[in-house]
Image (cartoon, rainbow, N blue to C red):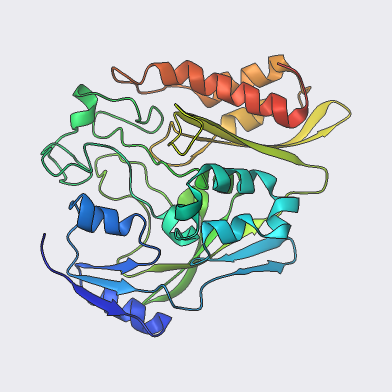
Length: 330
């Protein structure tokens, strides 16, 4: 392992300056992903780690019709927030399903948004073919054993999965990500925050080098909206999703008036199912409608040997979460 400089930042401006001024520098917050990549997997080799863990970027604030969440807020802390439990229950469900209690007490919200893929090939430095780690080298997962990989937004260049549970309902909500860099502050909708692999799988989001997430705004669901998060996994204990789905529905007199749907476990990025939402809005809340929405959500999948099963499983996951949220029996 190559050595690196460790620096604890005293304030946000100095943290941004320390990272922006060094092309090999990176931020360190809760460390649940970063330390794995640097010390355990040894696939990331920073010249400097800037610890921002003690900066005042923690906690939640109710601001009108949104909940503002500091980037350094721990997952467990956010899950315990009473406003989140009352107004955004599917976000709480995703938080609790996303990690063990020990990890939830360490992992931060900003870090969860920026976590790297769990692709076994990316995390194995002995595998040479990984376009995400070594651009232009190929994708070992396309021809190798693949199961926990993406079928939406994927291509022969990369099938690496975005594994976050939390980002699924946040994508459905149109959460807003606030970032700060040397050029000032800006706000990026979460639906535009991530970048599809395309020809550059190593570019995962729109952040410029040195920009840091400061907080995230979560719009509260309108009164009367029901929501839920469903995670399908190999075992009930802590495990990454094979497929997952977040849904929020406002149903009036048996008709869907508003719908938000997003998918996890299947996309190279947290996947907003806008086609499914279009099917749902104005339609009766019925199993037939939900099946049509599921078909719309999982269209043109890119599968490799080992991931074909996800197509049908993802559709069933969508139908089930919509049925559960609406109270319609499937």
